[in-house]
Structures are given as structure tokens and as C-alpha cells.
Amino acid sequence: MKALNTLLVIFTLGFLLRFLSVYPANTIVGFDQARDFFDATSIVFDQNLKIIGPTAGNNPNLHHGVLYLYYILVPLITLGGNPIWAVLWNSLFNAGSCIVLFFLNKSLFGSIKAGIFAAIIASVSYQFIQYSGWLSNPTPTIFTVPLFFLGLWKYYLGKNWGLLLASFALGLSIEFELFFLYLIPTAILYWLVLKPKLPSLKLVFSSFLIFCLTTITMILTEIKFHFAGAFSLLGAGGSVGFGKASIDKTLPAFLDKMSSTFALNLSPQNLNLGIILGLFTLIFLIYKLLNKKTTLTEKKAVYFLLLYLCSPVIMLSLGYHNAPWFLIGVPPAIALSTGYILSKTKLLPSLVLIVLIVWGNLTANINAFGKPQILLEPDKSSQMSKQLQAIDYTYQSSDHKEFTINTLTNPLYINAVWAYHYKWYGKNKYGYLPSFSGGDQLHPYDTLPKTNDKEEFLYLIIDTSPRIPYSYQIFLIEWANKNSKLLEEKDFDGILVQKRLLPRPN
Image (cartoon, rainbow, N blue to C red; front, side):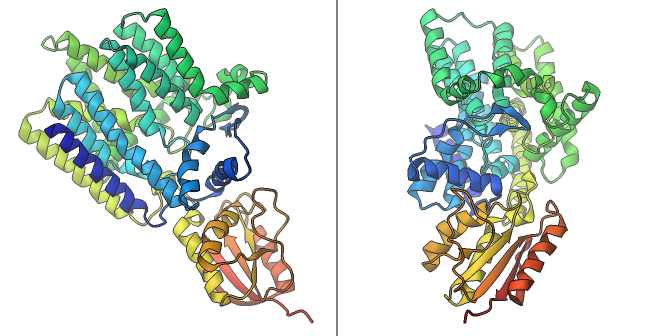
């Protein structure tokens, strides 16, 4: 009971840190997020059930599942469309991963200390907390992947329900992010290395059925497209990241990403320590395997932990992706490994080390407050807090008079972000919508009415990201100069807003 109370405190601390890192509007909202918000809410508003998920990487034949849309639908529909509620929903599961890791490490090594240490690291981890504020389909896997490994280990210990849990979590993980298909060969290696008992036919059938039900939309997508994704899967690496580059190029990049992942969870104030921490962890686990004093039971647990930690190597067979979230499956394994190592250390040194880890992560998190998930390398213009400030300016500067907007966006000519924000935020706060003077928008991005030529002000909302060639900004301003007079400019850190006076109709 004492351990569970401690775990509750750790979880509460973790959620509080995640809350402070994002509230009231500190998250990324770019085109991908706005598209997902519209797609999710259309399930209810347009009675448009979603089956086919977005394409994966640059391969048009590969698709993620659509579970993520249903995942964010709950907070968006029930709490008024504010993306921050979806972020806090995501943060709840992200913080909940510390509970899964506690029970997994406790079960692996029969040590409450190992479980508590792993939970503490996950609770305060800078990388975990950065992921908690990021609204994208891979983020829930920081909860579902440890659940998969918990199920596998419980099955090894003779619990039949463990295989059912593993099948369920495997399906969820793949539905959220396609590249977690690498967990399937990982499960095969688990069977070869640990040699658990063979399941009964009934258990095999039940587990397979659960997996199929959790991935049903992906299965239906494959049927619809005549299994094009399955046929192209082995060539998927040629369409993402470095593609089918030789191992001498992909392996160093992979190892560098691994070392930075260690640092971002254990020493975010000193990223140069990452490679040392990674090597020490690997050497310690191998030492425990070679040490004759290590019991067979503990060796099996170490084998399992190494399998978890090293499982992303399997992805190199398809190629390497240089996205900052590529190794999102690794942070929980780092928390488990470090928790185990600390549990094998004498009490005073282990307490000193966990305090240093907590202090380093808390400092990194506090320094990042008010900055939207900088680890994910967002454009400045994608800061939701700045976007809402720009919207407030357009309403307040208009003094409740009618106005119209035109926007420069990435991708070009798709007004998704502003169409979403003006609908849930602007209209609810100020009671009306501006019109849109840009090109015709396809549903569901057509939330703003067309201009009626009665507006007094025109606002240009310009994304100044270097991703957009400057010539497009010039074209937009030239268009506006022909139809309006510039009154003032406001810069919202990546979002330039021009207030313009429109000629009054005769």
C-alpha cells in the first residue's frame, strides 16, 4: 500500500509538470494538427466515420491507422474544441506510463525500488514531457508500447492474460504509428530468446482476434487498396528519411539518436553525457548477464530488458528517419534500465543519482515552460499561444466592426489553422466570425464566410516561416496594396499581421 501511495504521488507530480508545460495554450498547431482536428470532429458533426488513415512517410501505399482521430475526438467534442484539452488528455496517458513502467520493472526484477525509480524518471523526464504536449499520432505510443512489453513479460511468467494484453497493446501501437510493426519481429525474438510456454489454440485464436479488432481499420484499408501497403512494405525505407542508404550511413545516425535519447531523459542539461550513459547502461546489462552470481531468473529479465531497449534496431532494415520523434519507443526502456541499475546500487549513491536526474530534468522542463515542444523543432508560427494572440488582435483592433482576413500558410492556400481557431476561439469569445478574402476553401476548411464587401478592415495573417518562399509574401502584399491601405503591422513571433483599411462602398 505504501508503494502504491508513492506511485500515486509520482503520477500526480508527472501530470502537474505536464499541465504546467502546456497550459493555457502552449502547444504546436500546424497544418497537420488542424487537419486532424477537422477530421476528428467531422466524425460527429458530419457523421463521417473514418476508416483510412493518413499516409505514412512519403509512401502513398502505406497508411497509419485512424485510431488517433478517435483518441482526440473525445476531448475536442466534449470540451468545446480547444486543442489544449486534447493536449491534457494526451498528458494524462503520457503521465500514466509511469504506472505501467512501475509494474513492469517490479515484475521483471522483483524490486519495488526498481519500479519506483523507473516511475520517477518517466514522471519528470524532459523528453516524456515534451511528447505529452505534442498532438500527433505517435505520442500515445509512449503509453501503449510499454503496455505491450508488460503483457509479454506477464505471459512469460505464466499469466495467459498477458498474451491478450500484448496483442491488444501491439494493435494499438501499430494503429497509432505504422513503424511499430517492428514490434512483431521483436515478439518473435522474445519467443526465441526467452522460450515461454506454447499457448493453447484457444489463446492463440483469442490473441489474434484481439489484434485484428484493434487494427481493423488498417486491415480494411489494405483490402480496399488491394494490399498495396503490404506489398510495398519491404521497400518503405526507400521513401522516408535517409531511405535505403547503406548501413555505414544509417547506423551512425541511429546511434547518435540513441545517445541523445539517453541524454534527454537522464541529463537534458548536458547532452554530451548521452553516449556515456548509453554505453554504461549497455555494459552494465551485459555484465549482469555474464556475472555468475546473477540468478537465471534475473538474467532472463535482463535479456528481456535488452530486447526492449535494442528493438528499434530492427527498423534499420527498412531505412532510417531523421525525424526528432523517430525513437519514441526508447524513452520507456531507458527509464526501466536506469531504474534497474539504481536498484542494484547502494542506497545513498542511488538516492544521490536519482536526485541529480530529477533536478536536471526539472530544470530543463522549467526552462522550456512557455516554449511549444522545442524538442519537436516546430516553426515559430505554429505556436498556438501566438496564434490566439493574433486572433485577439484582429477582433480588438476592429472594435467589433466587420472585418475580413487573408492568410499566407504552409501548405500554400489551405486556411486550415485559422479556419479552426476562428471557429472555436474567435466566434466563442467575440460572438462572430470574420470573412475570408482568400481563395475558395474545400470542406471542412470553409468555416469562414466569403467576403461581402461590407467589411471595414482587412487583416493579412502571414506565416513568416522560411519554409514558405518570400516571393509569396510579396505577392500577397501586392494584392492587398491594390485593394486596401496599410494602417499598421504587428509581429507575433513568426506571425506577421497587417491591419488594412478597405475602401468604403458608395
